[in-house]
Image 1 (cartoon, helix red, strand yellow):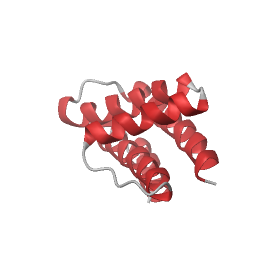
Image 2: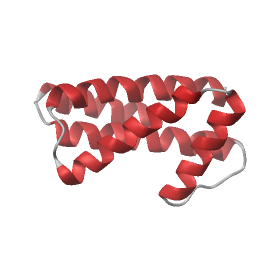
Image 3: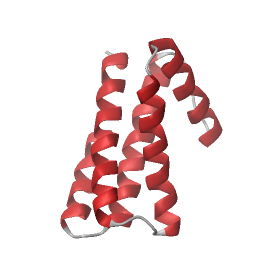
Length: 109
């Protein structure tokens, strides 16, 4: 699902719709976290469980950037409701979410 959502985010960026692009990127990040958790026998329900798990991974991997990139994904999710981020910021955020997912793919393999 992460790949599908990232493709959709790219489509929305091309159309100039940062709100939808950011929400799709958030969905991609969310799904990627849930896949890693599932491979470890955990089911994550709700935002607080997602945050806790990403914090655990960040500590386990000694990778502070992972948590920073997660913050970016979450800001894109907030932007879906608030619509305050300019398109160029959302574009950068989508790139950061791609990097976040790449890092999780390494952990999941």
